[in-house]
Image 1 (cartoon, one colour):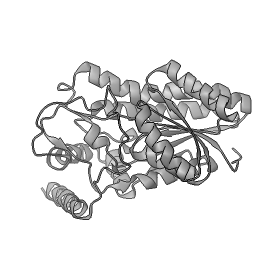
Image 2 (spheres, one colour; image 1 turned 120 degrees about the horizontal axis):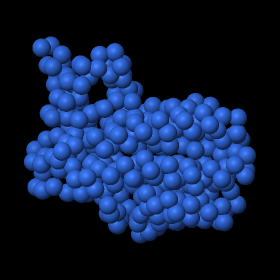
Image 3 (cartoon, one colour; image 1 turned 90 degrees about the horizontal axis):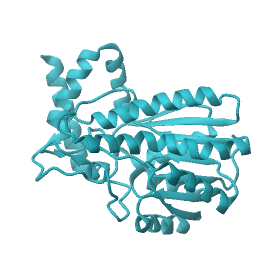
Image 4 (tube, helix red, strand yellow; image 1 turned 30 degrees about the vertical axis):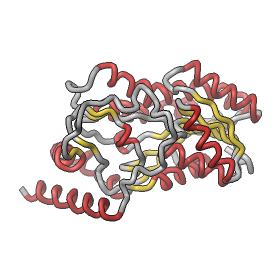
Length: 313
């Protein structure tokens, strides 16, 4: 699509992490922003930041798992700014636990948010893109759209399905002037891990090395101006896809070991549904604090030592 000086950009999941970083990024470019998350109070905090950075901002509290709410979000954006140039489907939630540990309603809600939220967003914005004859749909998947891991099966399921949905939709829209882009981050420093549902009985943390949310936001903001369909963020972990594709047994063993000994640690006080069903109610930080120098080095060293030990057996 042809980029305008002041694009109208809708960002879902804008209250923290990658979504908040993405809203800031577009605000610096002077975009007309429509930001969406479940909490109005959280969005108001982000909106003030974005206005201070030069963006015009419309706040629309909504849950992406509600299709009618996504239609209302798209309609509100067009009513306010006349069009939509970029739709960023970013909202997501996380749940830790084996398939048998996770309650069925938690599993279902992760799918409803991470997958059906993308589908509802696409269904809401495509009629507007069709009328304009142009538009960019940027869907945020994950490295787990291409590789799996134990103990997070609903998240992996939702992200695998997002890749399939994006590929099919891209094929259907070829030649329409509407572009579909998929951004696949690896481990990113956001509060999603602190906010995750957790039924493992242990504390959780991301698999190192951890990239900044700003890197993902940069990839998202650049995507509409590029012809590339898929953009990975996190080169080190992307290399694991070679192991996944050509040595699946080794990948499965390593993923299980790393989850057990690196990503899970200590003891959690009790099971929690995190923010799967309800917003935390306040704006989350862009960073989850996972890139603090000491912790980053410790986790990277531990991860490398664990993997080398495993491979040497």
